Length: 191
Image 1: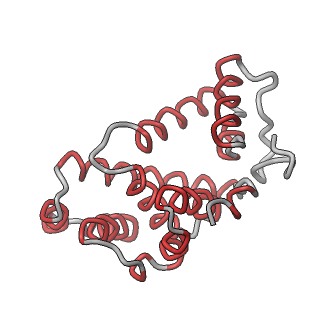
Image 2: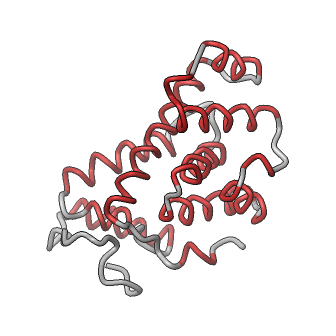
């Protein structure tokens, strides 16, 4: 657990103790690279199979090969989380946008209203699609996908945009249901 809180969530789901060796190594790598163990990982550590499933999907979607840059994926995470008002993801992924973009104002604009940001056509169309998919997925039509193609996205990129959007809609709801709290370090990171 982090020193700044007893539990990362409001539910009484204690971490497996001791952690399996592979999980402990994963947590150690996070602590070394990030300077913290993200509370979302600690929250999932009550069930190592669930933690491994979550981490594998997250790592594939957010860090795997894609025509969508890591910054763009984080931008999607923030815009989806803004619509869903997910405190955990807005804080954690807002910090990632600040870090990857080198622009603290961009992170704040995406948290508040991505339409206020000075985005290029590619980014704007991507975020418009993610917002529509979050707010009213049943209204997505071929014209929406064509807007993305016209902005330079491939069909594989459109799949990735949809997958990242869907993932954060799911995780936002789990975070809200469990009152997941972000690590305090995220609040001041990359400002």
